[in-house]
Length: 182
Image 1: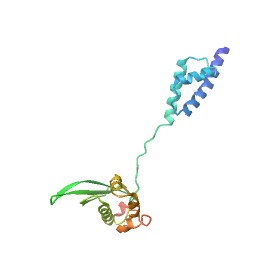
Image 2: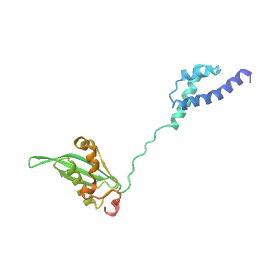
Image 3: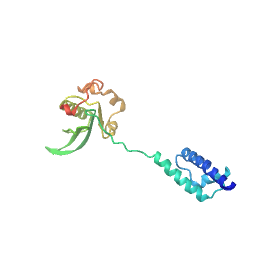
Image 4: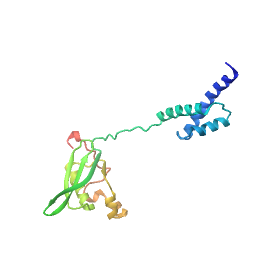
């Protein structure tokens, strides 16, 4: 090995480490031309093509370790109840709204017709739903709370609790077990 090739081999090892540092610090966003300029300032004598190739390899390895992994939401039995609304049929010339609730784990569904989406109607539907289920789940998830926030102030919503509708405190509620018939 000649002195020049040993120098190049040393720079390949040191330069590679610097490139990894820069890619990590920039979260994979450093450009090869900027990295090459920095390497030249440190005394690197290789070509820009070599720098681009190395940057591409190191970025590809960095991306493999930093990809976002999709983890599906797996619900626990009886813990989550979700509800939404749909357009119902006209009954006596009056349009109805369907309150549709389901337990996420068991896919057990309850459909209750409503005249409107006001808070008393929704809480009455939730109360009826919990009575049908035989208990209250730990969490109740709605599609959009903006329906209620537009019509009532936040302070009013904070004062209206499930207790006033006979549902009970969330901490006192028992989780439902769909396999146990709930």
